Length: 83
Image (tube, rainbow, N blue to C red):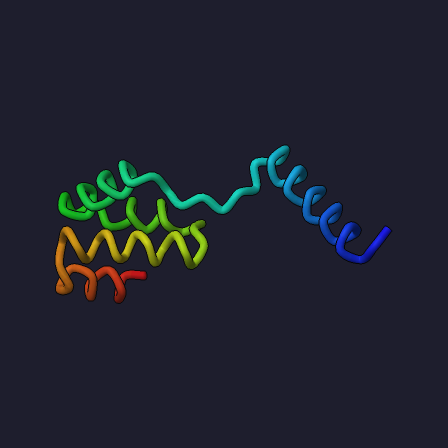
């Protein structure tokens, strides 16, 4: 077995393991982004904080881009201080 074949087998095994345990790093759906921006506008800042607490850096970045697009940079600056 070549090194490339061995590497391919390892990658397939890791992909299968991730599929079985659901360990894919999918971003939160856009609908949730909408819900979170609505909560923010309703003054429910702690609920927004609780929702994004367990997110990885990519998810937070995507949410911040969405948040800035729809609520503006002033609100993004407030969110930044809050986080």
